[in-house]
Amino acid sequence: MTRSAAAGKSRLATAKRVVVKIGSALLVEKSTGRVNRSWLESLAEDIARLRARGQEVVLVSSGAIALGRRQLGLAPGKLKLEESQAAAAVGQIRLAHAWKEVLEHHGFTVAQVLLTLGDTEQRRRYLNARNTLTALLRLGSIPVINENDTVATAEIRYGDNDRLAARVAQMVSADCLVLLSDVDGLYTADPTRVPGAQFIPEVPRITPEIEAMAAGSASDVGSGGMTTKVLAARIAVAAGCHMCVTAGRESNPLRRVESGARCTWFVADGSPVAARKQWIAGMLKPAGELRVDEGAARALQQGKSLLPAGILQVGGRFDRGDAVVVLDPAGREIARGLAAYSSLDAERMCGRQSRELEELLGYRGRDEMIHRDDLVLT
Ligand code: GLU
Image 1 (spheres, protein in one colour):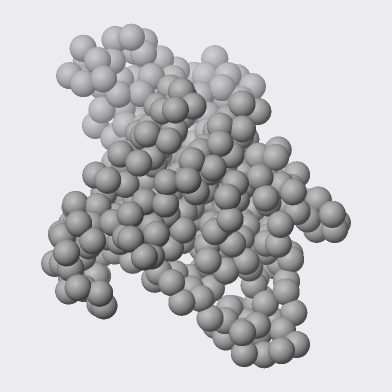
Image 2 (cartoon, rainbow, N blue to C red):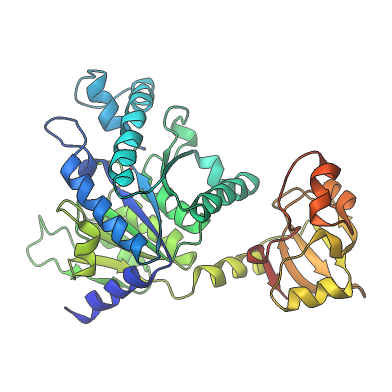
């Protein structure tokens, strides 16, 4: 095994949370328009092996439109928007069912999650989806995610699941994203046209040259060519997540990556937690502030979450998911974080115990005002 293949193997084998994106061309048999069952079963075996090692797995699966169009008897060629939306509605049931069957066989619970662009681009909805996915993982299930194609029209859609998968990887703080594709990775030029085209096993940094190489490559199936894969890689590596593009057509595609199969790794240089904390610390304009007591200030220094009981005073107007500054009793900034409640709710929660919150607010939210994953000391 080459040095870069060995490094790749370890990125996949040691990741805590892995997102795998499965393209339509792999999952759906071209000749019949049906699920490629034996291949899917082999992938389920791979997933079971990851889980047996204690790794968490999130799947982003395409295939709804491809499966639905056959069922509806739609003619080959480009579909009208409403036809592809109808095909997605029919195909998504089949897709989810296929995943349920192959993964249940290994004793896993499958959860279907359909996302639209707004769920990853608007902070409140993003946090909501993040919490749901984290809860599903904590409860031991395997989320199977697709775009909600039935309601997503051109201007509000990702269109390709490569970028959706990268957003999901960022959202769940995954440390490894594998794009199972119909191409085995990135070349210096299109290998089908340029005889001397060289394969690139590892991309330590996404430069304009890398982008130009992607633009010159040919990947014909699905909406995601190499350019969208590089865009996805940008999102993933900025979130501290390594990303691998590999040809998934053969059986047991994840095992093949671990055995040194050809693939291109886009390498992240920080961890997902560090990337997220950097984002919280640097990029957000705080919308308010929370002054906390000595006990809470000490707890934060020890890496704990901020509980409502420790809050003395709320300043500014903020919504759930907005960035806020945390001040010590003397008014000095000690941390920044994402508020789990709005300023209106926070004012009512000041100094209260977490168990009193439901009665106070009329709904059951999070126990913490700022969860430690959403908090960075400054
Ligand atoms: N969401 C689409 C589907 O399930 C696929 C998008 C893509 O191919 O990337 O059919």
